[in-house]
Length: 440
Ligand code: MTE
Ligand code: CO
Image 1 (cartoon, protein in one colour):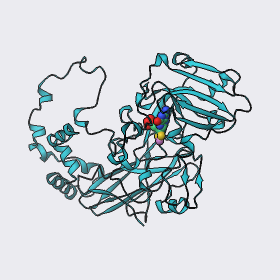
Image 2 (tube, rainbow, N blue to C red; image 1 turned 90 degrees about the vertical axis):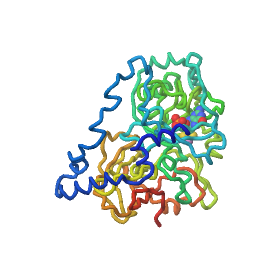
Image 3 (tube, rainbow, N blue to C red; image 1 turned 180 degrees about the horizontal axis):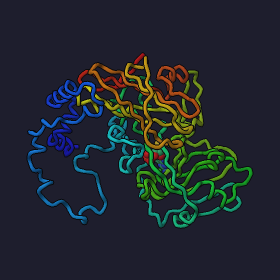
Image 4 (cartoon, protein in one colour; image 1 turned 45 degrees about the vertical axis):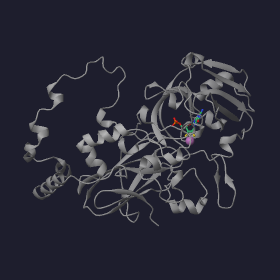
């Protein structure tokens, strides 16, 4: 990261943003704008008055305006602008005892819309990133089927395809926040989620090709990585909306996401979305493997554990402002933005509170509202510069409302790691700096 901090120093706008201190000349401009333009439409306030003509960004010819740029042969595979180098997946040192069995997080505070760029999708591996040669990759279906089958990647691409946008959330997302506010940034509290468009074949199609016997009620999905990770999935879900996907956002899956083939289990916990998918066994009962017994179960206060808690319930988070994205422009128009999702379908409504949950305003959901996909919401406010306790609360199409963290603890005790969909609070201070807090 040393080159990154060097870069920060050389880019004034970025330094301004990360320090969290508003640029005084800009604040002054905004104040002038407010005084002169009282009663003007909010949108007009953000524009700089023509008096900014002394600005060297206007009066001086910049290098990019003077010299030729790179040619079309310079970047056969494109990467973001050098000024976006800080927009990366990051991990938390104390959570990363060994990087081959760990997690990094999506920089949600730097993104907009509902689609996660491929290079920024969080990663969770149990045994590192398998480097699979697609020519040697096979998918086997065996167990309680009429005809056990083996598919090459080429075989799979000859079945009818579909394209679907789905979020994937690790069951452990927000897991460090169960006992109180801990990590300072939505990237770390909520960044174990991504949302891309998958291209692949319905799982149902290839299961029908093999012919599932009537006694076949469960499916074991197994990965080709060194952990050979496996999960039991009820046949009803397998035949409903699951897919075997080979493309994400139009291009081949990234190695991190399971190249060349992954299972897509819409709305259900990320652990079931087996990467580097190599085998599907049909059985008459679940297998009770490691990932559904010692892990991915929720120990309750009475000592009993919830098991097979597959669905990721309705959840939301404000991505801006947030600890890594403080308010740097001072008072006036402020765009509050965030993400909401539900493993049960679409999100119907998102409410936002600026006073820690006392009063709520319904936010505007913008962009597509798709089944089991991320939804983007906005609330445009006129910030008077006073402290805020920002919260968002989502409601899904079935009327399920996101609970507070205290409500969750009452229901599930304090032993849990997984399935924390509680309401997040960000404390915005008068200087625009934002902190992760809890309100009681
Ligand atoms: N599949 C295999 N084969 N090996 C793994 O380690 N990790 C699981 C799941 N599938 C894993 C796997 C977990 S816990 C999650 S949350 C998701 O993959 C993460 O998917 P991603 O790395 O594409 O974000
Ligand atoms: Co996971």
